[in-house]
Length: 339
Image (cartoon, helix red, strand yellow):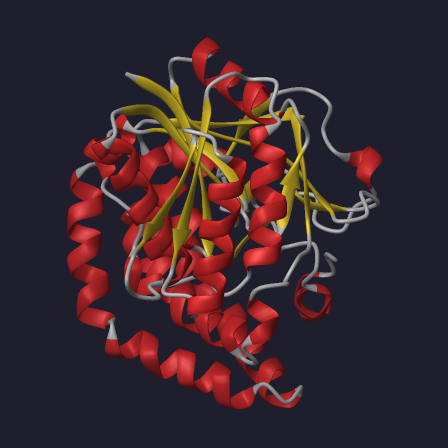
């Protein structure tokens, strides 16, 4: 059985992907396989990837073409299927616009091998210059909003001990391939944004845990891919937040989370319109209604797999507003006096 494959999902960003691959081929962990998962890039991009593979002349780097652009969610699914087809124990992903320290793979695999209850691991994702934090894993809040831990904190504030977290950033993680047999693959309807939170939420509901390793460090050019398509992030945010909530939040937490989610979703939608992002935000909102039946069908399947208590899920989510929601904090203070 092969041990570990790391996927790099590529869409017309061969230069970044090649730099990413080089960092993975230089890992301290031996026998790491790298696969470019190409999401229907232009011919020149594919040629650059193949030329790099040919030049490298290594048996542990491959190109897998999906034949369509199904987003990050589709790319992750293609990678997981490829890993299972080729009999890998672990499958991970690293953003094409990121590079990993040499012990990134070793640190993440160590957490999996020493914690049998854990199915997904993530590390410290720093900004490209290493000064600030992009993510140390994901969280979910009682307001129905997810987010990256420690986003924009200075690098030295990253947690320095390994610990359990709610979710792993899709920007850099490793998972057991056996997990996909139990909870399924990534939600292609979500395309990109929060598909990683959705996957982690489903894993948690099914009784699997997620861990963070401070020694697994990577550096990320945040937004380098999404910024090439104006409005893409806004559209997918407003489409995917209701899908994420409806599929995963246990019924026992709806009385607490649902009213808050409706309020904050409405406020950030109004803010998007005010700040000139009205069309992609409204389009995403309307598209979420189109998937209403789909959401509840998926919910039935997800909740059938639930093996943990509502109390446990309540214990691993954040009982507060996201740190960057300053407007909502001011709104709450008017009524409660609490910032």
